[in-house]
Length: 167
Image 1 (cartoon, helix red, strand yellow):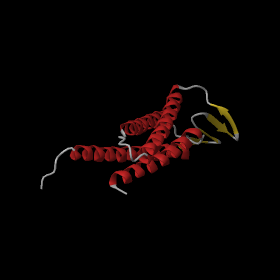
Image 2 (cartoon, helix red, strand yellow):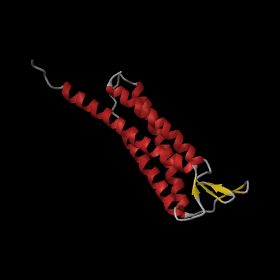
Image 3 (cartoon, rainbow, N blue to C red):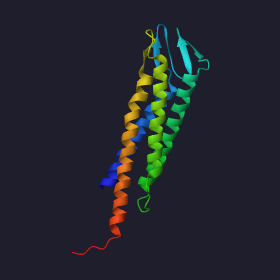
Image 4 (cartoon, helix red, strand yellow):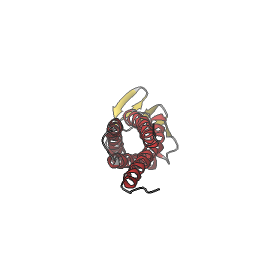
């Protein structure tokens, strides 16, 4: 297995891990804990009874960015696997790189907005769903860099192959 293939495999594995973490973070209701309950992007649970969260701008922005980040990450995973499986075709991975970095940026925006809303409340503590989002963030960027390096190797190989070699 060459360096390019190893980077693509590593990028796909990191993207798979970040996709799982992002989807779990988005869909679960344990972003914050407070006295007697917990809440997420979609529901707030108090004393075992859950109800939908009323529309708030910051939570809506966070939820939209999280859904887009998860979607882009999953699409990038599909494209990355397709690139890796079709070795005979000379496919470059700019779309995957863009989707991974865009997904990371959206994830960062979602988490920063949610943090700014809840960071100064003394009775609120961040919980595991929220931390899964932060854990997915570096994996997305590292996966993007893996595909970027693999693409640079492919570009340099294509550029060098056009030059005649005289020894």
